[in-house]
Image (tube, rainbow, N blue to C red; front, side, top):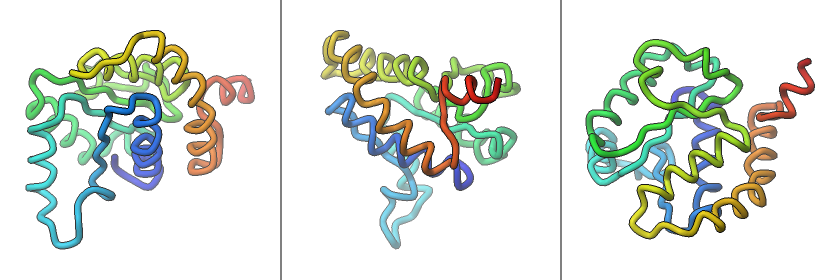
Length: 164
């Protein structure tokens, strides 16, 4: 994450993902690095043990050098892992440069379904597809409402219908 909206999105996902897949242990730097810890070492240690990374992309941080740095660090540190740029308020066509090398998803019901399926696919303790296909739609309103509150607008299909 980089910036207030991206941070809010990352923290919303940190709380929401374990509800969809109980084995997921999200890590977000602003919540999971303790006072006095060396942040660079904490991040490097987490990257070494992670097998999935989500980069929260908003219009404000699309060209952020920090986001590009984190994307590079994720892809380099996690050679066999997945990295997904998750787009909040953006279209897939908005990505360019280094971020476009990753298979991005929009932060809507369909996109989050794909992200949860991808996490489940690389997990040692994967759950059945039936559980994923039922839990994500059931829990989607929780994430949608939180991001609407944090961002001041809706995400997903409703935003497109309203803007038309």
